[in-house]
Structures are given as structure tokens and as C-alpha cells.
Amino acid sequence: MEKISNKNATVGVVGLGYVGLPLAVEVAKQGFNVYGFDVSEEKVNQLKDGNSYVMDVSDSTLQDIIDGSFVPTTDFSNIKHCDAISICVPTPLNKTKDPDVSFINAVVQELIQYMTKDTVVILESTTYPGTTEELIKNVIEEETDYKVGEDVFLCFSPERVDPGNPQFNTKNTPKVIGGVTPTCLEIGLRLYNSFLENLVPVSSTSVAEMVKLLENTFRSVNIGLVNELTVMCDRMDINVWEVIDAAATKPFGYMPFYPGPGIGGHCIPLDPMYLSWKAKMFNFYNRFIELASDVNGNMPRYVLQQVSDLLNENEKPIKNSNVLIVGLAYKKDIDDLRESPAVELFRLLEDKGANVTYHDPYVKSFKNRGEVLEPVSLDENTVSNSDIVVIATNHTDVDYQMVIDNAQIVYDTRNVTKKYNTGSNVVLLGGSKHDEEVRLLEQKFGLTPK
Ligand SMILES: NC(=O)c1ccc[n+]([C@@H]2O[C@H](COP(=O)([O-])OP(=O)(O)OC[C@H]3O[C@@H](n4cnc5c(N)ncnc54)[C@H](O)[C@@H]3O)[C@@H](O)[C@H]2O)c1
Image (cartoon, rainbow, N blue to C red):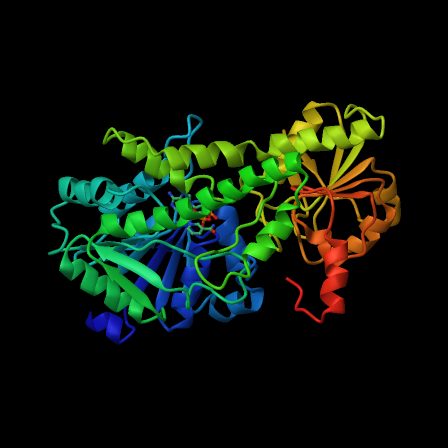
């Protein structure tokens, strides 16, 4: 505690990805000495050269701390120099959609070899309730002479960072934290209080683990609901976007969620499955989770069907049609392709024999079935030579007016064309027409546009 207060503590961050790198940088900026551990030599070397591969960390911020307070390394024996360790390794699903906790287990094996007395360990990776006790506490107590809560201290604190969010970052996003014992929690709070703005203590590590899963299950279920309504609105010829915008004017009791070609990223498609997997051990079947996963998981296939129908109207089969996907990342203004529904759509279209290309200002290359593909430039030629342009992600830095003006058909899955002058060549996921007439009336009556 004294070392933390004096900022003499050395902090280790294990796993330098989207979560771990911004955390390590924030801790180093607050004056602590930080070791960043990763198994990837390539990433560590890149960091040592002052090059960040995470968009939320700029090269200049990294260069200010590298060779000083921040030491990236692949040498896990440096754990012995650390007073505190935050673990931010991946928690993916395996092929049968069960949790793959092998990354956490690998870190625990390093910990039990090198950790010293009084170390505080905080798991940040999203995982099922019980993980911190089952996979870390029990192993430490079985494999070393340390007792958790007396000799070493253990907490769970889920990472909530929203990559690319300009308003909320690692430092100012409230942080939930639970300890294995009250002393563990007190030490964890003391540590995180020295570099984060707002802490939310909870009574146990299981509560903290469950908080994260509730948050992401809430998103998955609500997106699933709106995606299902979208498919229904298509059938009923009602513009779902207009419905959502109007509903969102209710100042209480409603929160808008928007449709899209599916869900992506390392969190929303995966995290709820951690919970439903664990629940099955208690003979409990999470219907909401499974249903949302089913609805959201089928959206790329629904978009494929819509694309096929639109081409059909133009008397073209998908086979040998030129399809241009605009936006390949899983969400707006970031470069992350993990679980991206646009990538799945790309492959589904290829499987049907289409000639698929992509444009994405953030994705400079993309490994597709072993082949490295590069984006096409977005100009009048590439757009007009495509039989259909599918807007899969609504990046800001795209000339949508040019796309609309030159494309034969635009299929917009994100309603990004709403702000532009559109013609009959633009078709929306969830409603065939833009509410042009309403927009004119809004102007006429001086109303704030929805
Ligand atoms: N990406 C997000 O937006 C986000 C948000 C909140 C929570 N999370 C959670 O945070 C965790 C990390 O996610 P991420 O997006 O940072 O993943 P990531 O893949 O970007 O980074 C993980 C890093 O860990 C490294 N690694 C793998 N095995 C290791 C080991 N044994 N020792 C040391 N390093 C190892 C990898 O090389 C990689 O650099 C996951 O549990 C995820 O669910 C992610």
C-alpha cells in the first residue's frame, strides 16, 4: 500500500492488446514503472520502436514513456520485479463455442513461477463468474505456499473500454472491482485509485465477473431484438430506422439500439456465451442469450439474401457479379476485424461466386482464406463498375455522396445514406425508403430533425 501511495510500485500488464496497451500506457503516464508482457515478439519490438498498433494509443504518447517508465517484454521472469499484475489476455471461444481460458491458464503458470510475496493480481479479461477463484486463486494456493488474502492479493476488475470512443477511455470510464477477500479489494482499490478516476467496488470477484457479462448480454439481446424487428419491418415495408428515431424521442424508459449486418468485435458476440456455458453447469438454460446469438448470427445471411434479391431485380445472378463492400471493420471508425459481420458477408458472397472487393479507410489489408487482400480505392470507376455496393460499416471518412451518385445499387445496412441526397438506387436494410417527405416537413415546421 505504501509503495502504491508513493508511486514506487512496479506494475506489470500481461497482454498488450486493445485493452492491455492503453492500460499500461495510462499507468506509466501516472508515474509508475510498468512492465508490459506479451507472447508476441513482433508486438513487443514494434512498441520498443515507438510504434503503436492500437488506435487509442498514439505513437507520440508511446514514445514519451518507452525506454523510461514503460518496458515491453516477452521475458516473464520480470514478473518477480512487479508489485502488481493486471491480466488482459484474450478470452475467445473454441470451435464448439465454449470458453477458451487457455490464455488465462498460461499466464497463471508464469505467475506461480515468478510472483513474489505481497503481489496483487487483477484479472481484467472478460470471463464467466467463478474464473478468478477457480483458475487463479485455487492454482496459486495449490501450487505455491501463498495464501490469497494474506500473502498475495487477488481481484477481478472487468475492462469496459470502448475502442475508438473519443469521450470515454481507460482513465475516465468507471471501473468495477471485486476482491477475493476484503483486504484484496482494499489493495486493488488503492492501486487503481492512483490512476483511474472512478471506482465501483463490489462484494466479490464473481459479482464483478457477472457485471461485465450483464452489460454485454444487455447489448447483445437489445441488438438482437432490433435486428429481428428489422427483418419484420422489411417484410411489412416499414422503415425501422424511422421507427427507432421516433421512439428515441421518448425522454425516459427507452434507449435506442440500431440494426446492422450482424455483431462483431471481441466482446458482444462472445461474452454472453461465457455466461450461458457456465449457467448450464447449474442446469440453467439462458434463452435470451441463445436467441439473441441466433438472431444476430443470422444477419450476415439475411443481408446476403437481400443482396441476391436486389441483383435479381436487375436481372443478375450473384455468381460473377461485382460486389463492393464499403467498411470491413466490425464498427465505425476503428480497424478491428475480429468477428466482423462484414468479413462473414464477404465470404458468403464469395461462396456464391461473386467477385467481392472491399474499401475501408482503416483496414489496409485483410487475410482471406490464406490470401492477403488489399482495399480498392473508392472512386467513380470502382463504384460504377460494381453491380452493387454494400455499406457494411458506417465509417465517417467515406465519400458517400459519390458512392450514391455513381453506384448502380447501394444496399445500406447502417442508414448512413440518410444524411445525403439519395435516389431510387439506394435501398436500406429494414425499410426500403428514406423518410424524405418527413424531412421536408420537419424543415417546413422548423422542427429539430430526429
Ligand atoms: N477489445 C475490447 O474492446 C474489449 C473491451 C473490454 C474487454 N475486453 C476483454 O479484454 C480481454 C483482452 O481483449 P483484447 O481486445 O485486448 O485482446 P487482444 O487480442 O487485442 O490482446 C491480447 C494480447 O494478449 C497477448 N497474449 C496472448 N496470450 C498471452 C500470454 N499467455 N501472455 C501474455 N500475453 C498474451 C496477445 O499477443 C495480445 O497482444 C478479453 O478478455 C476481452 O474480452 C476487450
